[in-house]
Length: 87
Image (cartoon, rainbow, N blue to C red; front, side, top):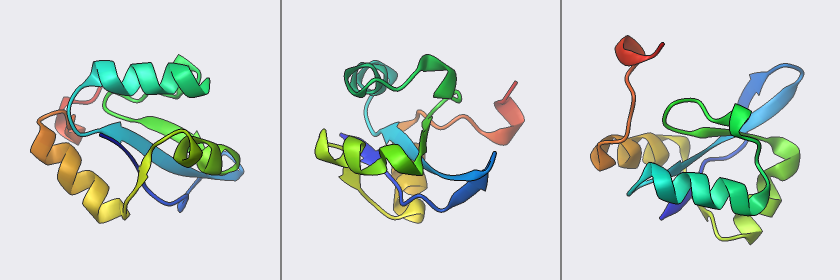
């Protein structure tokens, strides 16, 4: 399942959401490609989604969840890349 949290993360003059899969990175990349998110928005275990694209990814099938639910489900999936393991 593809999950997206509310656009509450500030950065670079806008607000961002996170887009994740709770089952595979292949599913995540396929969804991102389907909605036209550039690969440069991928950050090891999620895509950053600018606020102006939020409604579009939800309309395309991403399930809206809270930020805490998103991270909990990402960790449970085994796909979470911890801060210690980031580049």
